[in-house]
Amino acid sequence: MSDQHMGDKVKGVGKEAVGKVTGDDDKEREGEAQQKKAQKAEEADRLEQEAQQKRNQEAGHKGEETKHGN
Image (cartoon, rainbow, N blue to C red; front, side, top):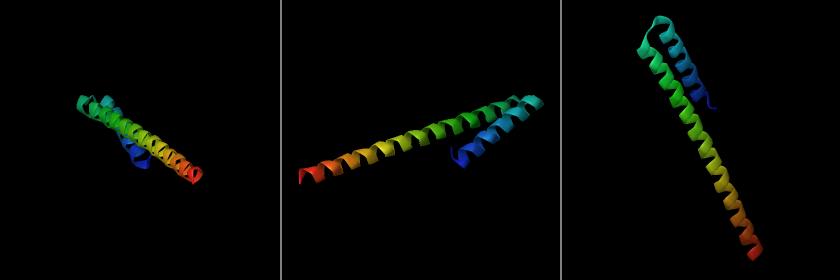
Protein backbone atom coordinates (compact mmCIF):
# COMPACT_ATOMS: atom_id res chain seq x y z
CA MET A 1 0.00 0.00 0.00
CA SER A 2 1.40 3.38 -0.94
CA ASP A 3 1.72 6.16 1.58
CA GLN A 4 -0.70 8.27 -0.46
CA HIS A 5 -3.40 5.61 -0.39
CA MET A 6 -2.86 5.00 3.31
CA GLY A 7 -3.10 8.74 4.01
CA ASP A 8 -6.32 9.03 2.02
CA LYS A 9 -7.77 6.04 3.84
CA VAL A 10 -6.88 7.48 7.25
CA LYS A 11 -8.33 10.87 6.32
CA GLY A 12 -11.50 9.14 5.19
CA VAL A 13 -11.81 7.26 8.47
CA GLY A 14 -11.34 10.53 10.35
CA LYS A 15 -13.96 12.35 8.31
CA GLU A 16 -16.39 9.50 8.74
CA ALA A 17 -15.85 9.48 12.51
CA VAL A 18 -16.24 13.25 12.79
CA GLY A 19 -19.41 13.05 10.73
CA LYS A 20 -20.84 10.37 12.99
CA VAL A 21 -19.97 12.23 16.19
CA THR A 22 -21.28 15.57 14.98
CA GLY A 23 -24.29 14.19 13.12
CA ASP A 24 -22.96 15.60 9.83
CA ASP A 25 -24.20 13.05 7.30
CA ASP A 26 -22.43 14.79 4.41
CA LYS A 27 -19.07 14.61 6.20
CA GLU A 28 -19.70 10.95 7.07
CA ARG A 29 -20.48 10.10 3.43
CA GLU A 30 -17.46 12.09 2.27
CA GLY A 31 -15.25 10.03 4.57
CA GLU A 32 -16.75 6.76 3.34
CA ALA A 33 -16.26 7.83 -0.27
CA GLN A 34 -12.64 8.79 0.39
CA GLN A 35 -11.97 5.37 1.90
CA LYS A 36 -13.57 3.59 -1.07
CA LYS A 37 -11.54 5.69 -3.50
CA ALA A 38 -8.32 4.78 -1.67
CA GLN A 39 -9.26 1.08 -1.71
CA LYS A 40 -9.95 1.19 -5.45
CA ALA A 41 -6.63 2.95 -6.09
CA GLU A 42 -4.84 0.28 -4.04
CA GLU A 43 -6.53 -2.44 -6.09
CA ALA A 44 -5.60 -0.72 -9.34
CA ASP A 45 -1.96 -0.47 -8.22
CA ARG A 46 -1.95 -4.16 -7.24
CA LEU A 47 -3.40 -5.21 -10.59
CA GLU A 48 -0.87 -3.07 -12.46
CA GLN A 49 1.97 -4.69 -10.51
CA GLU A 50 0.64 -8.15 -11.36
CA ALA A 51 0.34 -7.21 -15.02
CA GLN A 52 3.90 -5.87 -15.04
CA GLN A 53 5.18 -9.09 -13.48
CA LYS A 54 3.41 -11.11 -16.17
CA ARG A 55 4.85 -8.90 -18.90
CA ASN A 56 8.31 -9.34 -17.41
CA GLN A 57 7.85 -13.12 -17.23
CA GLU A 58 6.67 -13.23 -20.83
CA ALA A 59 9.63 -11.12 -21.93
CA GLY A 60 11.94 -13.53 -20.08
CA HIS A 61 10.38 -16.56 -21.77
CA LYS A 62 10.70 -14.97 -25.19
CA GLY A 63 14.35 -14.29 -24.46
CA GLU A 64 14.82 -17.95 -23.50
CA GLU A 65 13.22 -19.10 -26.76
CA THR A 66 15.53 -16.87 -28.76
CA LYS A 67 18.60 -18.26 -26.97
CA HIS A 68 17.55 -21.86 -27.57
CA GLY A 69 16.67 -21.19 -31.21
CA ASN A 70 20.22 -20.09 -32.10
